[in-house]
Image (cartoon, rainbow, N blue to C red; front, side, top):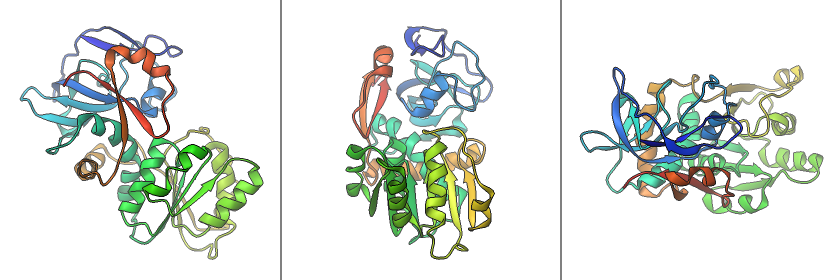
Amino acid sequence: MHAAVVRSFDRPPRFEEFAVPVPGEGRLPVEMIAAGLHPRVRSGADGTHYTSDGRLPLIPGVDGVGRLPDGQVVYFVAGDGDPGTMAERSVVDPRRAVPLPDGADPVTIAAAMNPAMSSWVALRRRIAFRPGQGVLVLGATGNAGRMAVQIARHLGAGRVVAAGRDPERLALLDGLGATDVVSLAGDPDQADARLGEAAADVDVVLDYTWGGPTERALPAVLTRRADRSAPLDWIEIGSMAGREITLPSAVLRAAALRLMGSGQGSVTARGIVAELPGLMAELTRGTLTADARPVPLADVEEAWTAPVEPGRRLVLTVSA
C-alpha cells in the first residue's frame, strides 16, 4: 500500500510504499477515506507529543473515516500502538469506531471531530457544566479554539469570551457564538487588562495556549473576580505557546481555582467514544461548522508545509 511515512522527526512525511498492516486480535482492517491533519498529528510526527515513544518509521494520523470489510463507513480513533491513519489501509478497534450518520460528509467529519472533541469532551466529561455559565476560550483563534466557541454556546453557555492574538481569525468568532472578543496582541499589560475585564467572572476556562499566555491570564482573571471564592474550572487542553508554566502559590490560595487537564488519560477511551455520536450528529446537521480542504494523500509532503487559510483544516483523502 501507499502511506505518508515519517522517517525523521525533522522532515515532513513522504508518500511511499509501506507494508500493509496486519490486524491483531480485536482489530479489523479498514480502507481509509479521509484523515485530518491536526496539530496533534503534527506533534506526533515530529516526536514532541507527550505520548511519543521516539520510534521510527511511523505513519502519522490519529483518527479518520474509513470503510470496514462489510462496507460500513465509520469514524474511528486509532488505538494506542495501532498504525497511523494517513495510509490507504489501517486497522480499527471496533470499540473506538462510530458509524457515520446518513448525509454525513467524510471530509468534514475527518476535519472536525478531533478539534471539536477537545472542548466537547472537556465540557461534558471533565466538569459538571451547567447552561448559563460563562466560558473563556484562551487561544480561540486556532481550529480547536474556534470549535470550542461554537460548542460552548451550543451546550448552553450564557457568555463565551474568545481570546487570541490573530486579528483576522478573531474577527471570525463573533458570528460563531462569541459574546466578547478579546485581543491579546500588543502591549502585554493592556492585553491583561482587557482580558481581566471581559473574563473576570467566567466559570470555565478552556485553555489551548499554556506557557506564557496562561501565566499572564491566570492572575489577570483571578485578581479581578468579584467573588474569588466562586469556583473557576481552568481546563488545560493544548499547549500552543509552551509546555510549562510557573504557577505562584498565591494564585492557588487567593481564589477557588480548580486546575485540571483534558486529554488522553484524563478521560477514558470508552468515555471519549461515548461522546462521538452526539458530536457527529451536530456536525452532520450543520449546528457546528468546519471549513475543510481536501488534499490527496499523494500530496502529503507539500501539504504538510503549505500555508493554510484561517479557520481551515487540511484533510488527506484516499478514496471515495
